[in-house]
Image (tube, rainbow, N blue to C red; front, side, top):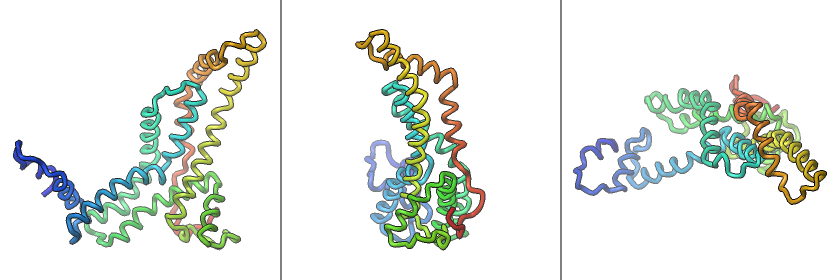
Length: 263
């Protein structure tokens, strides 16, 4: 019995047991009801649901998107405009657009065979589903050239990185790849933010110099420079320019990266 049927058959005045609803939801998920008890099913389902937002942040392009957009807001000097919810929502939907091919491959290669019953081994299904995501992260490391973060984590874990040509991507597990990818994305995002800051910093410096030369020391330069920064940003269609550059800056993997050597 699914959750919807459970709620539909329940009496209007009968109280709903939340634990029972969660247990029915856990049993309705394919592959979870594998002879485990109801408590373990609930624990497994809640664990997956709690880890999903973290995986979305750590293993996708969301980090670069939200950091760059936040730095852009600070460069404009508009304080809390656009609101944080707007920045996060825009970064989230841009992430879905960029990650759509990768998510599609993950579903086709790992999730769909498991749901259809053609692949009954959960470990094999997990490996097949995560491989496109690994290829995406390796593609970004290759494009940005930030292999130093990966080498640092490998060296900390006791792997000899003196000769990277002897290593392959298959030797890097997710525990090493995910933090290395996040460090690479943070570095790239701050480099992009620095380039975005420069033209607005020039405007602030010019306005500040003009105010000082005119003896208007009590007038805040930010108050005068903000309209000029907004005008410049609107004239160049800044939002579309920044978001398009962000989306095109991500490289879509074109070849399997199972045993490909490091770049």
